[in-house]
View 1 (cartoon, chains in turn cyan, red):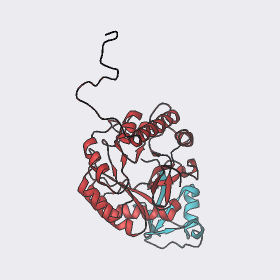
View 2 (cartoon, each protein chain N blue to C red):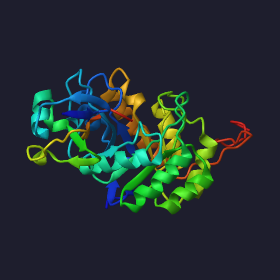
View 3 (cartoon, helix red, strand yellow):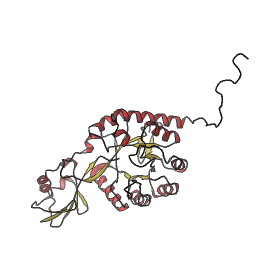
View 4 (cartoon, rainbow over the protein chains, first blue to last red):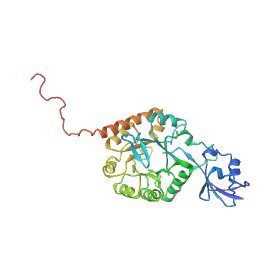
Length: 65
Length: 256
């Protein structure tokens, strides 16, 4: 399955959003996930099934003025 | 409500110094700076994660009693700014949003037209909208009509530390706006912040000058004192300037 992750197409064998985030080893506390334009809260990650062609934005807050 | 507090949305600020999280040598300096400065609102930005470096949660460094002011930096259009604002709110940052839309990458001038459009969209959605703009009175009036909670004119381009280059235009906003005027960007020294407050600005937002000082906490404190002094002077109604000398002592000679 292919996902569009932060603008880049990536091959992915993960079934759920939670698996993908674990696989990538991301800092969960800071992570904001937008799936096809909608924010997915952390408690929904395990139940969120990924589909071919899904567009994911993985975001976080950074320093800024 | 405390005496002389500044109201923005449903919040009251006794500190009129707003700060930013950008450009610190280490995020660990942020809590000490907030403590030393007494700043009650701080900005941050939203970006895609950088998969090559471990993510760090900047929100961990901001005490819970400090209001979060996410900015829409990186947005080039009103729609992009609105998307960032909605994500920030969904992510638990509250309703405050600093609209920062920059289409000119050389001078980093805010795009007033897109900023007005974003203000219209986001004020309708219940955000406390703080638009960062070039000081322009007709625009400021349109922002007020659109529901902006304040207007935030720049003193000088972002990060230049050049102070109040737009002083006379900011003065028009202060004289005529019904919403608070917060001078944002370009303030490089505590004396610039004091000058803005003496003019009657309601608050200032300072990031670079504090974050890139050798001792950000001490500089935060210096800015806080300057803002307080400037505010106090404004409320005390300053004496008039005069083109000719006006003796402070009697003009008669000592013994004659």
